[in-house]
Image (cartoon, rainbow, N blue to C red; front, side, top):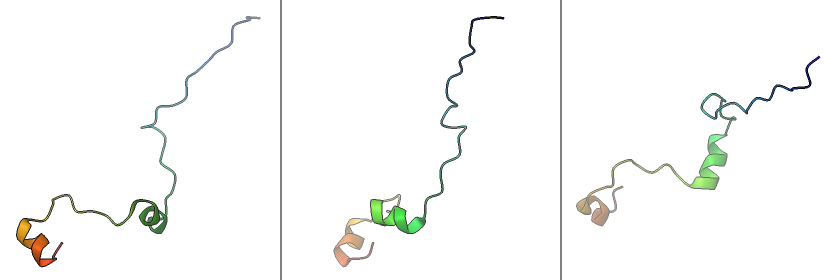
Length: 49
């Protein structure tokens, strides 16, 4: 018998699936989803986002 034990490192994060997150809980924590592009000056002045 061998006295050596086989050690493995934990799996990489990209291999492990993300746990389920409810959309409402995400919104409470991070706020509403923001657009990728920032609205222009005119849209911001008129209040359209």
